[in-house]
Length: 375
Image (cartoon, rainbow, N blue to C red; front, side, top):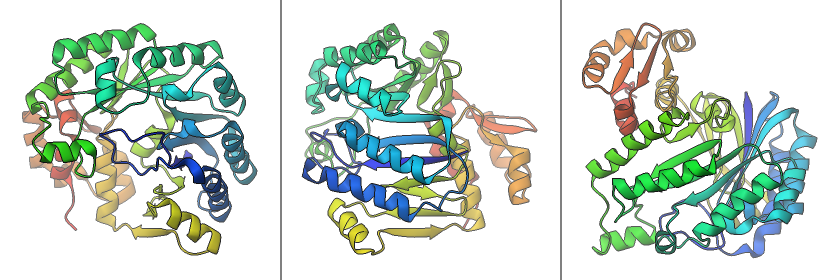
């Protein structure tokens, strides 16, 4: 199942926690849109399979004008064989959504929205430098329902300073009241180049303890499961039949084409990294110069990628498929490590698969590293 990811590198203003590639200068939005379409034409042979998922990420894809969104989707449909029932997701911020543009977004072919709520607290939204209010977020969700969207995901951030388990539980109750098909939760992480990173370095910001973050995460797992949501990936929960097909393909190691500044691509044996600079990307596309780097993956790197991505999901690592694909028995080579991780309550194992427990999900990358093959 192949997919296409489109990185829209623009935001109306910078959130204090965000370390993704974006610009708040929207003057080159039209030029970037044209360049993305040019890149799609240049790389139309990267994926030769039918396209099952299309994902607009960022940045803030909802800043696109309706005609720009239509331009990109039209280009994709002209160049690739796209499944008529493909999942087409648009990440959106509440301040960009209203009845009028939601109708246009849906008419253009988007059938799944991912709305960045982050929190229901107006005070915390201002602290994070978000543009929208809690009321705007809820109204954007209701408007999306009014125009016919039946597949909506909302994002929330836990482990915010000053929020304890009681406050976080209230946030989850408000999220459940919306009855969204999908909920993604992310623990607040402080990255060095961000405003929060500078505040932390200056001693002006104190992160919540690992114990508090863990208690909020584990409480979320139990709460959402009790409300009928499937915990299918470390940070993602869905009602039956509403998993994110696009993101699931990443974790399954499927091929995908990523276009736009800062986007990544994967063809099974190599990764491609587009330049993380709007001006350099535009110049390279317009002049026919190289705008990406390629990393060829060794066999061990391919196996490590499979371990890392598969372990993020509730399905886990299919041991028979791993052995079939790489001619190596993971459970035989790492038997002692697997036994230790299982005894510590981090890993469930049988002859068919390895999958993490909820506690294991808390440190998924650390567990994966213990199973990696040396370079």
